[in-house]
Image (tube, rainbow, N blue to C red; front, side, top):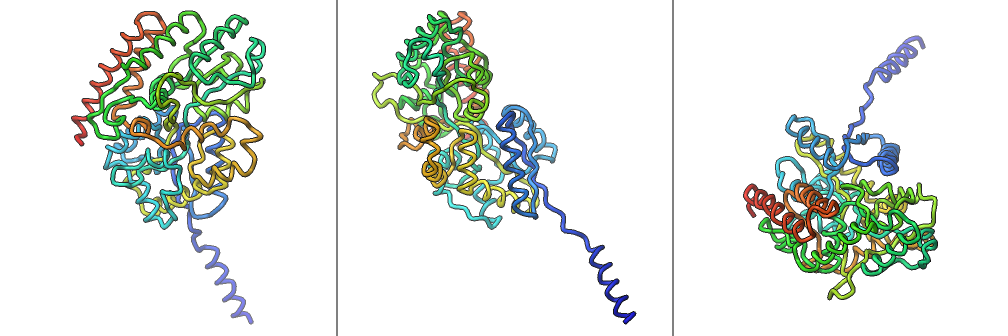
Length: 436
């Protein structure tokens, strides 16, 4: 009996000292702050609680520009994260960084996760897919440009609060009435290049750049000095001069002005919806982007914005299994639908879109389906998307040159001509470094 007791104790002791299998940590660097940062943290928490093998650790690394710069430096130093969130304008640069990334299609397959690129919304998946058909990054917070307006401000200005301006002439007319009613910021926009040139171009089925907006190769050059682009920026210049368009700054600086009630109309990301829904103390509307009705083929479709998740190279096999598991979780129809409803970002799969529609969410929240309906239309060679090298630098140049318009230092033609010339120099540099 005593021997049996000793044996049992020995077995128990052996069990107690047996090392517990440690979780594999997956480092995820992102650029989401505020309500969207809370969403990212909740996703990681939800995944971590769903299984025990892996632990996703999300880390905010600043703006899109800052996080991408930090990741490049970290990769060179040998301590890059497993997953990096990169905004869409960094896509061509990441694609060219062959030694730095591991294609997501390969990660999913070797990681043993179910992976079928055909389930993703075509316009989303296509943007992150290489010419050989291989998906390079994982669609995450995909957005597009939409139109927000303050219904209370419309009503006060004598405008129909249930009818959003559908065309640019209607936007300008509404802005005049809003100003006359005492509104100090009738219209503003975030991301000037994305909303007023990139999406503007595809929405009007007009090239932003040659070579099918860069999808045809690195010989692409900017084409935003066309009569249509010039007309639009001359109109914006007039609005800036008379105070009906108020420029709030680069990138998403203008985002705070709409939910705060400061600006009555705004073009911006569908991803702003989370902030608007949370902070707006007024009735608001969401609508499709305005267009010029005399342009043949308009409206067409808008382009993708937001960001995707890139998997960095040089990681242990176990890390890639964890990444594949996490991406599989993110693709879940229910997870996608809930994320879409919470943030305003696109559901990345058609199944998630249909589930959201069936739930009655779009009926209860009019306008929340606009981002999807603008994106799921059939695309053309001019509207598939925009994929340029050194795109981050191109956007900075556009910001610099168009700011000269708002300050009255340059005409719209002078600014657009300069933007094309300077941007083409950047595109030429990229072409020389990455001949296709």
